[in-house]
Length: 268
Ligand SMILES: NC(=O)c1ccc[n+]([C@@H]2O[C@H](COP(=O)([O-])OP(=O)(O)OC[C@H]3O[C@@H](n4cnc5c(N)ncnc54)[C@H](OP(=O)(O)O)[C@@H]3O)[C@@H](O)[C@H]2O)c1
Image (cartoon, rainbow, N blue to C red; front, top):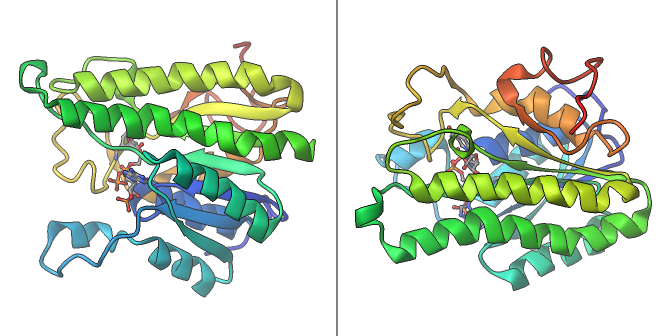
């Protein structure tokens, strides 16, 4: 992990950091100099012959250890984003340990694969709770500290192409990500006066546990990327404030061409 220093002195919170895109962003933020709070539900090691193993062990402790081994600083915190007390605790423990919150990547998410006639209510409720309610409550609990600091900051969520277009058998997931987009773009306006950037980042098709079968209908034409494909876009986004880049829904694949360093910001 090459240290770049772009985020030196900043404290980042990443949800869903035990594997996949969240783990990649955690490692990238730490490599850029941030102290990173690695949040997800703690999981046991998967058996070696499990398909899960291909995508990593799935523990926050492993992510934190990888950061430490690379010379960075991380704090693993067990957090189930469906529990508001866990989210409040995440914000409080971050401030207690690192003294501030500058960057928040709301990444934890779950799929909800089912045609609507077969949709189980429990699956729909969990999808909406993890993908919408959790990210909104996360903002509720981190923002008072970020506002009090008066130094600006950056929050972004991980959305999906499913928020913008039809994906077969994904009524619940698509709706959850569309609602998430709207929620974060609204929060961007609420906190613009505090110089806190809030953006929505779509990662493309990524080879993770969630996408393990790689067969989401309607996505075959999109190249399958590895989780660290998000690193440059995520680190740049994490360094923004409302005065430089906010209220945008952006595609990771367009970083450096349609948005990013030196590219004029479209009016939201
Ligand atoms: N992979 C893709 O192609 C793709 C495309 C578009 C968008 N996305 C989005 O990218 C984000 C990351 O997904 P991924 O592809 O990296 O999938 P993943 O490997 O399945 O990772 C999902 C992460 O979310 C966490 N999580 C799930 N439920 C949680 C809960 N209740 N509380 C806290 N954390 C929870 C998981 O940790 P624990 O299980 O340890 O809690 C895990 O760290 C998601 O929001 C997903 O919708 C992915």
